[in-house]
Every structure is written in structure tokens, then in C-alpha cells.
Length: 107
Length: 119
Image (cartoon, rainbow over all chains, first blue to last red):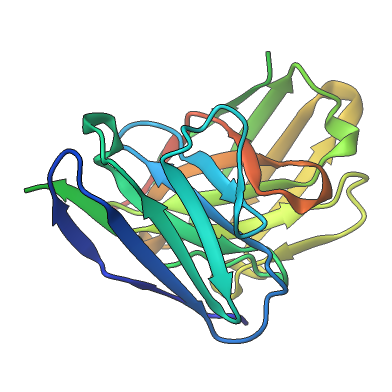
């Protein structure tokens, strides 16, 4: 199974900050990586698919990039509604594993 | 409007069985893979299983293989996750989610249903 190692597990940031979250796959996943935002009591929300493609309706302050087996989610100009937990997920090989999550907290 | 609605959660004793259902609307179910994802209390998201559009192929995370079975009825716009030999560690909120065309992520999710395994 492909392992997804996500870091950091939590980050404290202020409104307006730039936040970067990384995910490393244990093997090549051919760019088949998605990022999700999850808030308590709500369904997860797809932000990015195909490593860097913005899902329709998602603000452009969210962006994704890839370098080999390393993937990055960047949130520019952090907004109050962005405080949540973020997960990466690979969908290249079943089982479609998630990273451990990154909680973005208010500083 | 695309909707997925889970039902059937509840409290079950260890070793027991439970069936969670997912009713969908607003899209053509037979065109999409569907996944089940869970979140245990205080833990992260865990992919549990998925099923192909025609129901001919399914896969599961190792921890539920042989105990959980996913099925679908495209004519009735519904799916189910049958869970047997439940363990305390299966306690979680269970979500069904649609895979976007050409594997573009899980683009629509249900609101989730809580399954509690406890004596």
C-alpha cells in the first residue's frame, strides 16, 4: 500500500499569513493527489485534484504543486474561514490512502 | 443538485452487524465510482472501500477486509456498506463520497453517519 506522510500535524497562523502543508508519497503516484478541507461536523471539501488543479468554486488563494513524490498545498492570505484540518489523498493505487492531516489553528 | 445522504448508523455491540446506506440524487450514479471514508473520534480521515460504477470491482482497506462489503443498486440510486464482526475500533463517522470523472478526487460527500461499537 502507498503511504502518505503529511506534515506538519498542526500549524498556528494568523489571518493574512501564508501556510504551506506538505505530503510525501512512499512511491510514485503519477500526480494523482487531492487535497481536502475538513471542518468539525461537516463533510470534507475537495480543494485540489491532480496535484495542482483547483476544484470549481474554490478560492484562488489555495494552490497545489508537485515535485516527484512530494506535494504541497499552499494557502495564501489565510482567511478566517480557512481554519480547519487539511488532508491529502492519493488515488493512484487502491487503497486510496489519506495523509494524517494538518490542523490549521488560529495563532 | 448533487446529494448523497447516509442513513442506518447507530449503536451496536462488538461482534455485531450493521448496514449503512447511501441514497444519491442529482447525478447518474452508474457513471461514478463511490468511496466510503470514515473518521474515528479524534482521528483523521481513513479510506475504507470503493466500488466501480457497474459494481463489478471493489476494494477495501486491510482492517475491514472479510468483514465489510460494499454494494450498489444503480437503478435505485443507492449504495450500502454492510459491516459484520464489528470492533470497538470501527466506531466512526462514515461518509459516502462520489469520485469525479477521470479520477479527479472525491467531489461530493454525504453528511456522514455515526456508527458506535460498544458494549
